[in-house]
Image (cartoon, rainbow, N blue to C red; front, side, top):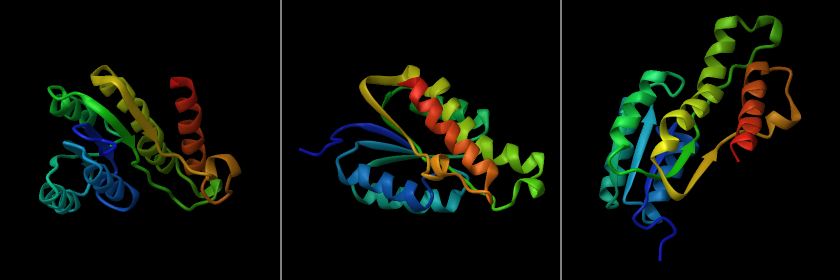
Length: 167
């Protein structure tokens, strides 16, 4: 039996990279539906075709994971089916030392990498089924640090701490 047989999943940052592979993997392991969240509409269309061909029902939400409106629309899109799996994968990095990082740079990275995880919990946890799972993707950089990516390491460290708090 497939590990995710009949489950309903959601993946942020699904348009490319790790998020795309996670969505495809969930489908290959039997997920009945996968809700895809990303800012790249064309990438979501491409992934949706691949998932549909594999027998999985995709739902695309084009939006910024760091924006509350995206989560409100996502909540309404998944409310009937509920959720078994949430993978908070959306993430960005800016390579700038702290002296060159603007407040706008800081907020953008923190919103996508950390605030999105909070908004996911706030909006979607009430829709989780018993025995559901949440995976919050962080980075080893959160533990090791890097002087060239201050907002990234702070946001990913926040993801680690927030996840511990939720657990």
